[in-house]
Length: 154
Image 1 (cartoon, rainbow, N blue to C red):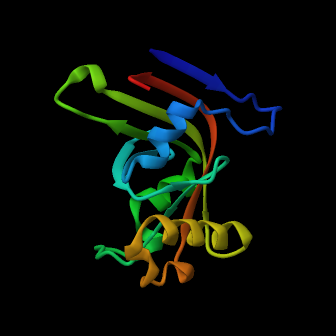
Image 2: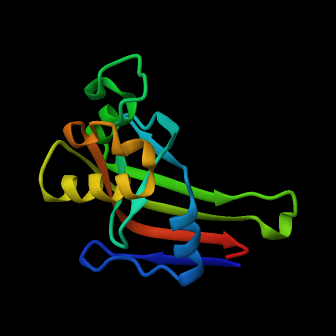
């Protein structure tokens, strides 16, 4: 089963997720974030995330990285092109149980503020590893969903 929802540019209301779609989003431990630079060159990476019903939050955490947080490809891409996509999926060998949610949206990178604090609190609640990391001092990606598609056993 496939479902689509869209928010127009003139609408500020958040997307409405079905209970089954919300369950898949909230139970997913990892998502895949797709960004693109100013020339449209895509970049996809797995991320940890949390959803508060209106925004998706993903930290730039303390896991080892080859460059500083400001030089990460996803951060640079978001600064050049705020359009992103986020995929959460469920896989089983029984393909009748496959499902995914694809969310398109606009992303921003926050350094501080009320949304940053809220994202940190929610991420620490979902992932015990973040309770000892200094994610409150690091950038946070915030995604405002503008369109959603889901498919499968959800």
